[in-house]
Amino acid sequence: MTQPKILRLILGDQLNERHSWFQKKHDNVTYVLMEIRQETDYVKHHVQKVASFFAAMRAFYLRLIEMGHRVIYIYLDDPSNAQNFEYNLKQLIRKEKYTHFEYLLPDEVRLDDELNTITGKLRIPHQVQDTEHFLTRRQDIKEFFTDKKQYLMESFYRFMRKKHNVLMDGNKPVGGKWNFDQSNRRRYDTSVPTPKPITFSNNVADIIKMIDKAKVKTFGDIRPKQLIWPVKRSQAIAALNDFLTSRLPHFGTYQDAMTRQSWSVFHSRLSFVLNTKILHPMEVIQAAVDSWDENREVISIQQIEGFIRQILGWREYMRGMYWALMPEFADMNFFNHTEPLPRYYWDGRTKMTCMETVIGQSLKYAYAHHIQRLMITGNFALLAGVQPDEVDAWYLGIYIDAIQWVEITNTRGMSQYANGGIIATKPYVSSANYINSMSDYCQDCHYDYRARYGQRACPFNSFYWDFLARHRQKLEKNPRVAMMYRTWDRKDDGEKEKILKQAKTYKKILNDL
Ligand code: FAD
Ligand code: SF4
Image (cartoon, rainbow, N blue to C red; front, side, top):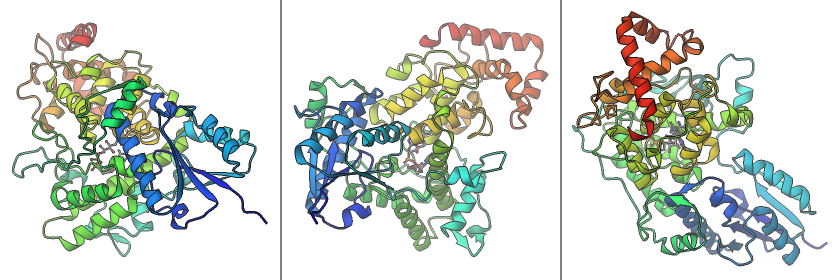
C-alpha cells in the first residue's frame, strides 16, 4: 500500500517543539509555516509584535529542520505567496500532490472557523489534533460552571490546584490559604531595587525591511537590530530563569505596583513565549514551584502563590471563558458606550502622566503589565465611555502577547465590563485616589489628583463619578459598587453639580487632555 503524503500546517502561535507531532521523523510528512497578509492585516499591530511573530516562526522553522523534519516556509515577500491560508494550501496540495491535510486546533474562533471551511474545500481527507498546550480543554470551563450562577475564577483555580497537585499539602493549600491577594497590593517603595528587565538582541532588520516594503501598516517603535523579546526556546528558558532568580522573590508583593522607575517591575514578561507555545504553562509552573521549594528563605508562599494563580488560574480560566462566550461576546456592549478612542492612545501625547507613561512604554516595548492595562488605559477608556470595539482593537494591536482568546476576555470582559459582569464581578474603575496609592505617577502630573473640579482637576476624578451617575440603574444593585453610591449620595447637590459639570467640560476636550 502506498503511504499517504501528509501536509501539516503550523500556525504562528503553535511553536511548540515538544508537541507529539515533532517527536518522530516521517518521510511522508511535510510541515508548512506561512507569513501572510491575512495575519498582518486583521488588525493594526505594533511593529514589534509582527517582528516577534515572524522571527519566532523563522527560528522554529530552523529548529524543525535541525530536528530532521521536512519543512516549507513561505516568506511574506515570496512571489508565489497568495497571502492567505486557503490559496497557499491549495497551491501546495496541487503542486506536491499531498493526499492528507492535518492541522492543530487554533485558539481563535476566527481561525477555527476558517480552517473548518477550508478543509471542506481541499478535497483531501483531513485531521485536526490538539495543541497539547493548555491544562484544560476548550469546553472544560463551560462544563465546570454548568448550573452555576457565576463563573467565579476562584473556585476554578482551587479545582485546578487540586487537580494538578500544585502547592497542595494533601487536600489543603500549602500555607493554609488559597489566596494571598490581600498581601499582594503593596505600592513600590524602592526598598528593593527593581531588576533590569532581561532583553535579547535579535536582529530583525530583514523582517522590518520586508514589512516596510510590503507596506504592512504597523505602529510603535523598534530598534531594527534589537528586538528585545525572546523568540526561541533557549531565549525563553533564559528569560524564565532570570525571572525565577531576580523577580519571583518579590512578584506577589509588588504585583499591583506601578512606578516610573521600571516598565515591568517584578513581572515575568513570559506572556509572548507562553502564547506562542514556545514554553508550556506546566513547565513554567513546575520551574517556579521547584525554585520556591529550593529557596523558601527568599521566596515566600505569598510570592509563589501570586504567580501560580496567574498561570494555573487566570490564564486557563480566560481561555475557557473565551470558548464559553464566543462569538456573541465579541459584540457585547453592556453600557452602550460609543465614544471613539482618544488620539493619545496612538501617540502617548497627553498631560495625564499615568496615561503618558503607560501608553509611552507600550509604544516603546509593546508591553505594559496587568495593572497598567487594567487600571490606567482600561480604566480611562471605560470611564470615558469608549466603544469596546475600539478598545479591543487597540489592545489586540499594541501588546506583544495579544491573541484574541486572551486579549478579548481581559479587555471586553474584565476591563470594559462589556458582558455585564460574567468575567468581572464589578467594573474595574477608580478615581485618581487608587492610582496615586499604587504608583508614583501623580507626583509631578499636570493635574492635581486631589481635585475633582477646577482647572487642574484630575480627569479620572470627575469621570469616575460621572460614570457611576450615568450607569446607576445598571450598577447600584451590585453589592460591590453599592457603597460608592452611598458616598455619592452623601455629597451635597452643589458638589455633585460641579463634578458632573467638570466631566462634561473634559468630555468636550477629550482628545486634548
Ligand atoms: P506576569 O504578571 O508575570 O504573569 C505571568 C503570566 O500569567 C503571564 O505571562 C500570563 O501568561 C498569565 N496571566 C497573568 N494575568 C493574566 C490574565 N489576566 N489573563 C490571562 N493570563 C494571565 N494577556 C495576554 O497574554 N495577552 C493579551 O492580549 C492580554 N490583554 C490584556 C488586556 C487587558 C485590558 C488586561 C487588563 C490584561 C490583559 N492580559 C493579556 C493579561 C495580563 O495583563 C498579561 O498576561 C500580562 O501583563 C503579561 O505580562 P507578564 O508575562 O509579565 O505577566
Ligand atoms: Fe493620572 Fe490624575 Fe494622577 Fe495625573 S493626577 S497621574 S491624570 S491619576
